[in-house]
Every structure is written in structure tokens, then in C-alpha cells.
Amino acid sequence: MHGLGNDFIVFDARHRQIPLTPPQCRRLADRRHGVGCDQILLVEPPRGPTTDFYYRIFNADGSEVEQCGNGARCFARFVSDKGLTDKRVIPVGTAAGDIRLYLEDNGRVRVDMGRPRFEPARIPFLADTAAESYPLEIDGRTLDIGVVSLGNPHAVLRVEDLAVAQVPALGARIENHPRFPRRVNVGFMQILGPDKIRLRVYERGTGETLACGTGACAAVAVGRRWGLLAARVHVELPGGELLIEWPHQSQTIRLSGPAVTVFEGEIELSGHGP
Image 1 (cartoon, rainbow, N blue to C red):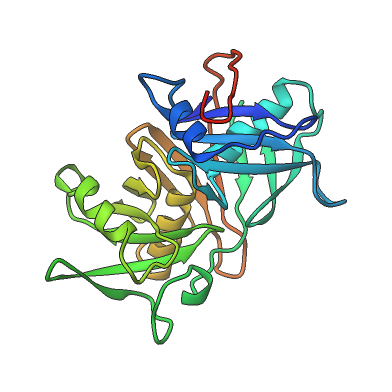
Image 2: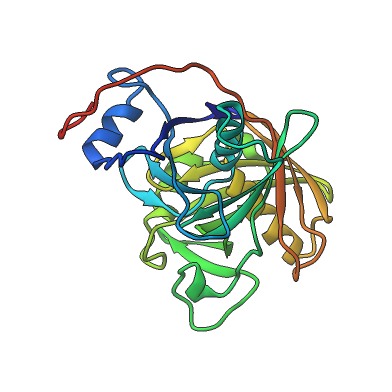
């Protein structure tokens, strides 16, 4: 499946455990020797009485992460298309907390991503005090970044021209900066106006992807906090466009966009890889 080119392998693990190992994830994600994907999603039984499913996300390098907005939309499309639910509003548990997925009449999926968290300890980010932006030292130069958690950690960097931004090189350096103990997703944001931005995202454990739902939410949240963006923002990513809505800092942030099934198949998993 994919959401704006951010692609996923989705496994139905409701009736049996699928204990994915890092070597299996790397092999599955390999675009030449495996299936090929940015991340691997597991549909599991609920872990509490208030949700219908549990949602797990693994990066291409095998690390498990807390949240993924594009993946959440694919998750909703998967459980609906497979007849696993007939609900239009689907409560789902994740490692970052419970979320709600909304199947819209136009075929798009909207995700309530919860409230963005800016406290450094919640991200986590090493800082003496909370601030709207932070100086970050990279190879002798100082960058101004915003940091926020959408259930997973994000750093947001404003750039003047996204076409010439050093996304792979600089993204890798920021992802692994010691001030981010659990690494970080890095968003490079070009502001076109208060209601539209361009964005490229370097995702931890994966590299640059064509789209990142939580990254789009993070960029809008930081831009809103800086007083640069409106409550409703169109986010243009390499894979397409997402709509992000965040009326007020006391409210939850929402994203909507497409989710598409590309193909289905079967694969055998061994102890060392597929």
C-alpha cells in the first residue's frame, strides 16, 4: 500500500503473532531482493476495551517506531477493504496512544493525530528550557530548528529553496545528533504562504521518503507556533499533497489524504529473513 508514495507492507496479525526481526525487516524492505517498502505495518488485536485494533510500525532498518500518519491512513483502508470493520470512525491503539481514523466519502482518510507536544522531554530532545526554536550545531554551523512530538520525534528546519536543500546529508546528521537520544525525523520546510508549504522529510531509520504524514503535521505545528501558518495548510510533498488542520494549540491536529492498495501476495518468513 502507499500514501502519496510513502509505501508499506501490511500484515494481518490479528490471529497469529508475527515476530519480525531486524534482518527480516531489512530483507522485506529491500527493493531489489525483497518486496520493497519504507515501513512495515502490523494489524493486531486491540490491547484495551476502547479500541478495535492495535497498530505497530517497523522502519526499513527493523527499528519499531511509535506513529506514522501515512501508515495510519493505509491501516484504515486495509481494515475497511478487508471487511474487518464496517465503521467509518475506527479507534486504534498505538505505542504513542490511541488515535481515531476517519473514512471520508471522497475516498480519502482523515487521521486525528492528537495534540502536538513541544516539551523537550516529551520528544525527547536535550535542552535546558523549552523554547519555540533551538540552535543546533552541525559541523561547525548553527541551524535554527523547531522540535515537536506527534507520538514520534520531529525536528523542523525552514529553508528558502527546497530544491537545493541538502536533505540526505543534513537529514542524516540531524537524525543522529546527540541531542536527540532516540534519533529524530527531520523536516525541511519551504513556506509558500500562510496556507501552503513545500516539505521534504528525512525519516529516521529509513531516509528520505516521498511523503510523511506525521512530518507534515510537525511542520505545520512548528510553523503555527512561529506565527507563520494558518489553521488549515496544504502540504506539498514529493509524492503529493496532504491537508493539515490545527485550529488551536489546545486542540488535536488532523491530517487527510489518500491511501491506495497496490498489490497483494504471500511470502514465507524464516528466522533469519524472508
